[in-house]
Image (cartoon, rainbow, N blue to C red; front, side, top):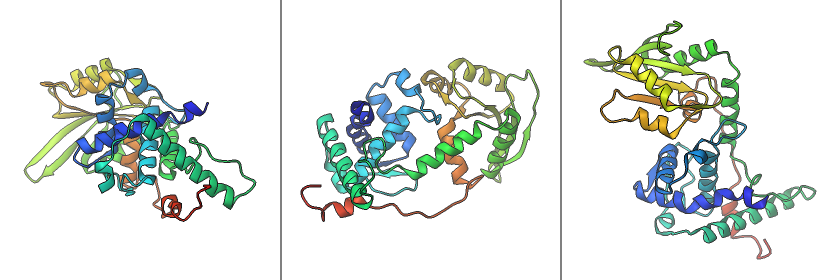
Length: 289
């Protein structure tokens, strides 16, 4: 059981290497994609999901990043960009070293919890210092999965408007190749793009065939297509969306959907919270902790 809970430890080294390869900073999705590609992560692992709908791999990479922050190898910024510290640029981690880091911080958190709440059980890798933003994202995604399919189409249209699209219309036409609506993105006074979108109110995986069918339906009708889903896209679906020589299709999965809602403050309220910086206090604790 402990082995399963600390399974994310194997990603500490690859995540560190990914940030170095990306020039020291990167968006979470960029880091995940880099790790998946260079560590040859199998499709089944990339598509496995938690009860929240978040992919298990994405969740584990985020936990790996959190431990690297506590260790002082990643910057603690929470503005959607991960970055290395000076120590992070120089550090190299194999899996045994990564597991030592995890064990060290689990022990620190357990000691901190025990001192603040003596009757409380010790924390482990699954419960130590949960990431509030991640938890709230999971709640938002779960709510999106509970709206009606028609409601999801309307809320996606609202999201597109809030993101700068104009003349957004939900067509609601059956048997239209999966086209749920269209909009216009004005880049500047001289350039605009007509965009078709499809809303997949899914709890599972969008396949390559579905991306291909959508592209076929949009050819000759728009400059670009967008598929928005509460689920995830298979690795083959992502490859199909980026296929060279074919009209581009932008894929927005549940995780990206949540970040877009947060970015435009749609359906969410901003709040300021403070998290205890255990790394700061670690140097002041006795050797027994």
